[in-house]
Every structure is written in C-alpha cells, then in structure tokens.
Image 1 (cartoon, helix red, strand yellow):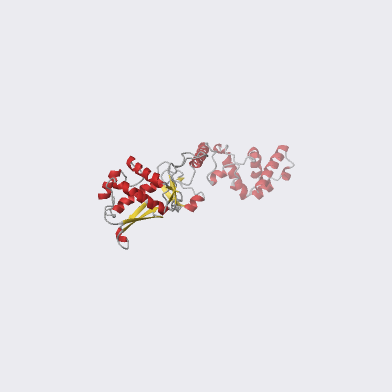
Image 2 (cartoon, helix red, strand yellow):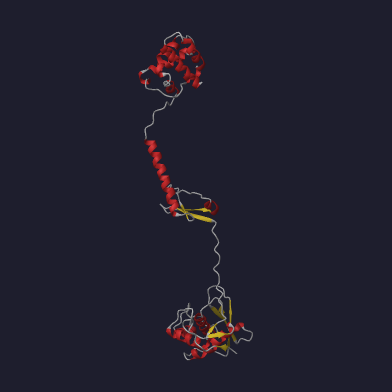
Length: 341
C-alpha cells in the first residue's frame, strides 16, 4: 500500500548540502500521516497511553485558522459516533513538528477530547514530558519521534503553505511628539506627507513626526535657533532715533538744505505771504539749539506743502546777479526741490 525507501540518505550530498538522516516516503501526505499513527500507537502503548473505548482515528491535512498546528474533533461529530478526526495544518513544514503534533492530537483522540489539556491528557503529557503548546520536546519525546521517522521516513510530497501575515492598514492619523515635554498630537496623514509642521503649545518647539527623519528635524531646529539669535542681535543694536510725530518731523532739515540754510532763510524772509510765514516758523524751529543735530532725509510737511512757491523763489535764474556762492546754494536747493516734487 505504501511505497517506501529504507535506505538512509547520506548526511552530505556531493554539492555540499546537508540531507535528512531519515529515509524518504513517496506517497500522499495523508498516507504518510496514517503510517505515522500506525507506527506511534504501539510505542505510546508502552507508556500505557491507549485509546479509551472502541473508536478509530482518521486524519487529514488542511489549512487551519490562526497559528494552531492542528486540532482533534470529538467522536460525537461523526455519523456513527465512532470516529475521531484529526486535522493537521498545512503550514507545518518540518516532519519532526508534524509527528509531534500528531502525537499531541492522538492523545486528545484517545481521550475523545473530554479532558482538554487537563485530567487524563495532562497525565499522559507528563509521562512524555510534553508541553501544552509549542514543539519543545523532551529527550523521551525526541526518541519517539526519531524512531517513527526512521521507520516511516519523511514525506517527499509534502509542501507547506505558510499563512501570510494580514496586511496592516495604514493609520489615517500621524503622531507628532514634542522632544522636550513628550506631549503629542495627531495630524491627518495627507497633511503630514505634504510636510506639515506642528509646534508644541507648551514649549513652542517643533514636534517630530513619526514619518520624519530625526536628523532633518534637528537641522531645521538649529536653523531656526540661528535665525532667532540673529534677529535678537539686530534688535539689540542701537537705532538712530526717527521722528515719531508731525512736530518732530517739522523740526528736521534735509541734508541738501542744511549747508545752505542761511541763504534759504534770506530768500524766504523777503516774501511777505502766508506760506513764507510758515516756512520761517519751520526754520526758526530748526534753528533751536536742541534741533541743530536733527538732519534727516525725511521731507518735512512744510516743504511738500509749499514746494511750488519755494521752487519759484529759489530758481537759480532769479539769483544770477548775486555772488557765486548764492548761485551755488540756489542751484543745489532747486535740484533737491525738483527731486522731491
């Protein structure tokens, strides 16, 4: 019924790969499992581990949910109540693990699944020094598995089908953590992928995204610190006082008029109109000792207000008969007034 090779393979093949010390079994996986049950039953009987009642065991290999290596079904689920069905998971790959699982489930079948992992099953497991879960085997159990595989062989046709890990769903929210106070917040994934920056409300520090690189985050933090230091240094440098009110602005004199202020006064003083009076008041204010140093590029309102009349009064052609110094002053003042008009 079963085709079997009794020769033991050499430990190392010609290409240097290690081979199993057990013979090879050429047949279906179910046939191999049935041969394992037939072989291991008398071995377990040596330890008084036997079927309790008149039942038979059937076995199959199929996909099993979760990480279980297999399971046994109570005989009450069979049509005549005399069959315990063992299912071995296809994800098991090593023959030693498969035999270990078959022995584990056979003890459930012998007890008709009445004790679970307690009672009679636990007493039998203690005899074999078998753990409830996993494939950690005692020397006694390893000896039983070796005897079975040496007699039955390893299933050449068996191919394990390892279950894939479930695909993890990407979270829609990305966590941002403050590196100073360990506070955290969450931001939509789309915004985080677009480079959204979030600052801690307590520490005013940029929070680190779980998608962000720590070195890049640290570089941005150092750049901000450098900019802050430069801004503070600029703020600490003394600034030249600028006029803050209209009166202060009227008390300043442009640099282009300051060297020629006496000539400017003499020309305006000859005019007997209202605009000349306002200009003279401005010149008197500038002439005060506290205002001598107020030379500013800001154009006083009085000049803008009477720019046309001043340009006419200070036109160089009207002073051509005067000294060269007066002509020079008139020319420079006229050029300034043309510039600001």
